[in-house]
Image (cartoon, rainbow, N blue to C red; front, side, top):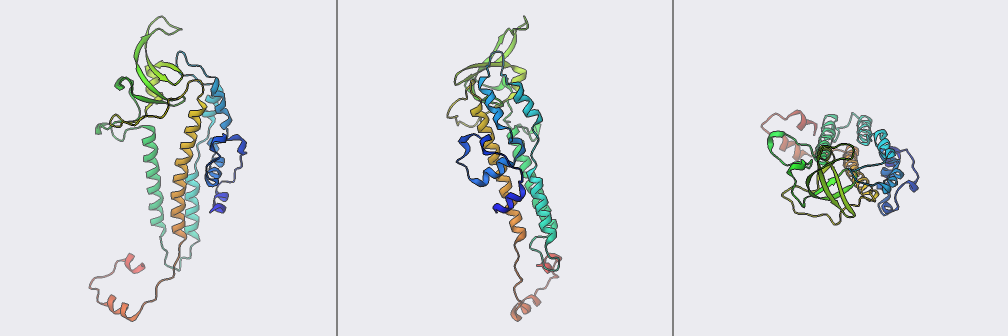
Length: 277
């Protein structure tokens, strides 16, 4: 299996680029992590440690530029191509365990499950009319004490919405105030609706172990990377499972006279799939 992964991910990145806190993970996970192009510049996360939050949540320009240039990984497509190649190499004269049509169904099923999982992580609603709660938050629906997650900073506790005068204007606007482990942050309501997510749904009562720090967002960045790698590893393992099933071959069992007599008593015409089996 390790050879298959080396073939999948030929890109090589030095392990010094990765935080030492992740070195306890299995080698198989890290081979996938180093090859993923969206994680090739993790050193930039250390630039966030000097960020200061006053009027709103700010990040360094270099991190913004890094995220704009960050390519989207497409490792699932690579695995799909491997499955199609394996399917085409099989001997057509033998009865296949899984035909190409069924393999495509497997691939489409995995893609749909991945899409739904990513949709849930982003907090998008499946339908506006179903009335279900979303992880994407409306600041006006928050209650004091609710836990929220800022994309760039991490987990904080919602305090409230108050009017305040920004430095570049004389007109007061509404700000969302969020408490973190080492201070209080405020950001405009419009910005909060784009950057904030619920830590849990209103019906859930789980609490975070600790709040994130405004002065050191690299800890939150490492948690995001670790979670992203875990999700991608889960999808890759699922695709490899289907690939392993496609490779399995077994010669058909010999037909005995008793089985032939039993089949002759079947009063219905077999379907094409039954004949193939």
